[in-house]
Length: 355
Ligand code: AMP
Ligand code: MG
Image (cartoon, rainbow, N blue to C red; front, side, top):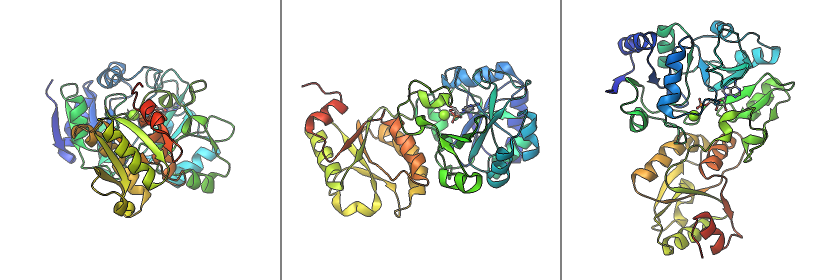
């Protein structure tokens, strides 16, 4: 199959909607990452999403709608606190998990009786959704396990030949996937952190629980947020988080070089003086954590493109947007964190070097 890339405008949105209504999948931009959508009412098309991505069938899809009045076409009930979240944060980078209507196939919800619903803030994304005139389940438009795509080129790199159309809306401004919060638990529960932060949610809603999978490698009760149990966001290179001083990052880099690795550091621009000539990219620009969210996935892809095999990333504070950045970094690194007390042997273990 030939994969076409078209700039997203009213005529390409019409073409995309026609493809959707004839049983195809289409990739489209949002303010978080690119999504891969199909009609919610077309089971065969929904299966194509899972096939193109290589996504496990029990990992639910987020259903995208164009406006608030459409939420009740997928959800059977909107609890009071969910309504507050909808009124406060939508459209925006947030997904609310609600009881599903029976018309929504379990194929979409990974077999669950709940459904995640989202209204993108991205105006062109909403234009595409309005043109489709039906709810659009859409996970991130990457191959499963790869970093989520934040440009049309990332989608093309993963799905060329597997989908007919990518709508190009430029680089995503947010860069990490939506916040996911469930209103199907007694207290609202944060299942995945994002750019609508825990602090913002607690300001608006009062008490909000945090699911353990947000920051831990949670294998047991991962059913609440299936996506969190899979390997995620991984480039080919080995990612190692360093929760320590700038000097520790540099000495780990130097040791990796001596072990014949090709390391690179994802770094805070403000610490540039410590770096010397070590290979690096700026993860955090102008000391602003939102830039780390925007840059992380694109940089994880770039390190592979440039042939680096070892990536050191400095840990960030787990507050505000930092929680979503650490959540993605921990998964990309398979929860590998070194610190000031780590030895050469710890580095070798992290790099899977024997002896
Ligand atoms: P993706 O669209 O690839 O970013 O993945 C969507 C993620 O949202 C899933 O992996 C789940 O973790 C979460 N999610 C979506 N729908 C539900 C739901 N009904 N219940 C719990 N989590 C959900
Ligand atoms: Mg995804």
